Structures are given as structure tokens and as C-alpha cells.
Image (cartoon, rainbow, N blue to C red; front, side, top):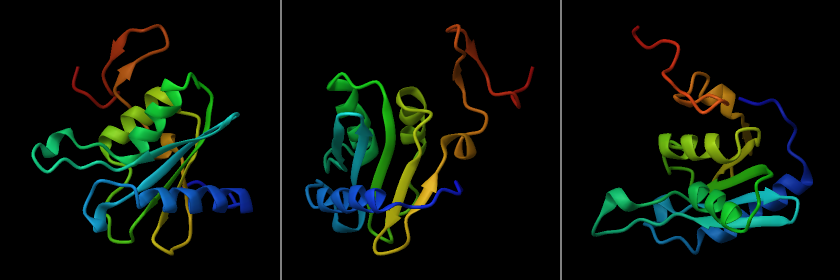
Length: 146
């Protein structure tokens, strides 16, 4: 993944994301906290899992990115995600797509439990995305059948 050194400021943002995880509405093994960092500060997100309709659950990073956008922030500089060590794969496919649409240039710092933070770069995780090109035309991934 991304070869960026973690700074003291990055560790502070991750510590905040960890504190936010306690606000999650999810089983303890899947609680997660996230921050979308912009020029004006951090926009919080927590995991929300609905017992009655699991498909409507949202991840912390989606909530943080949406909160930044709702606050009028388009220049998201970095994402920070803390989750329990056994939380599974993060970011999920939906998070990758939201990240791609709202902050494709921003690195994501992920920390699992007390482990070492790691820097994830979207282009490495999603090298051939499906979506719209800059002109707004839909295009399939390059490996799609013609």
C-alpha cells in the first residue's frame, strides 16, 4: 500500500477516529470511527448497522465523506479510519466508490485496533474503476468484454 510516513498529526486524527467508534450503532466487533479531513477541520463518521434492514447499513468512512460534503467541503485532504482488529475488510466496495466520487486524491489512513497505521491509496485499491470519465460519459472497466 502507500509508502507514506505516519506523522504525529495523523496519529492524532486516528485517535479521534478511535474515540468516535464508541458512538457507532453496531456490534462491538464492527464499530468503526472515521474522519474526513479538510482545510477547516475534520468531519466525523461512525458505523451504523440497522438490525431490521442490514442492507441499509453504512460504514463510518461513508458517513464522514458525506458529512464533509454536506458541510460544503469539496477539498477532502485525507481520510482516517479506526476499526477493531477483527473487523474484516475495510474499505468495502461501496466505500471505495464513495471515496472515488468524493475524494479520489485523498489518502486513507487505516488503523486496526492497536496495530500500526497504514496508508491506503485509492488508485492502488481500485486501479480500473467503473464510472464516468471527466467528460461525463459512462465507460466500462478496460478489462470488460467488447
